[in-house]
Image 1 (cartoon, rainbow, N blue to C red):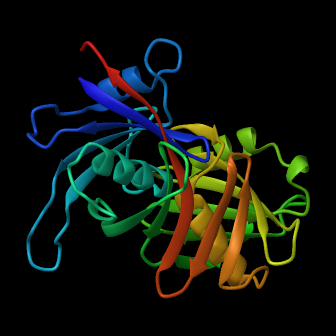
Image 2: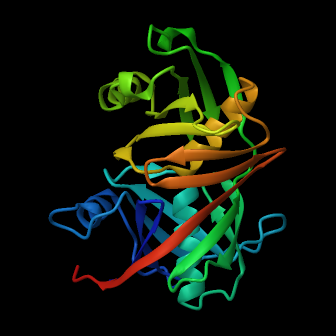
Length: 266
């Protein structure tokens, strides 16, 4: 099996290009490949198959996404950015725009060179964000506001006064277990500069990650609703910064890096 490995702000993915459809992927294989001690190691595995050309759903390729625990996910902002880089690098499509069919719908990624070998800036049309009502059951002395946001996958955004006061490992695992189907959890606070947001994320099926693309989009949408940020904002994460523009759809820009090309005996 021939794979490439990429990361967006430290959120790393393995990409399997399978245009012939001869390499089906299941939970067990995803877990084995993503295992950081006995496999290659990654936050997720992406399988690329041929695109669809049905009316209204024209895409260059189709994406299947597996989390590190083997569970399926509908969408990943950093993941789809890695996928776009992989299919352009391997010649599946010439780019710079790659249309991708996902379980959350059609998405497009536009790549631009970053002036460094193996690095691109990926700008993704992430589709609309659906911000729900305030969910008071999650509030306590460390959480000021809580809202659920759907960006093709589910997120619970927690506005906190002090990120260091929140045990996101424990809190994320607890909330993920209580919500049917699981949920991604972000803790956020404004700053450090005006109009920006700092976030930490617990991803369902993975745990704490350095960055999350859909999480950054969910956070930006929640921050606009709470009047913590404007329509154009920067989301600070441990892995780096994501630029977000909130409109009818959300536009996300992130650097994506090709790490390695790998042959795996399976």
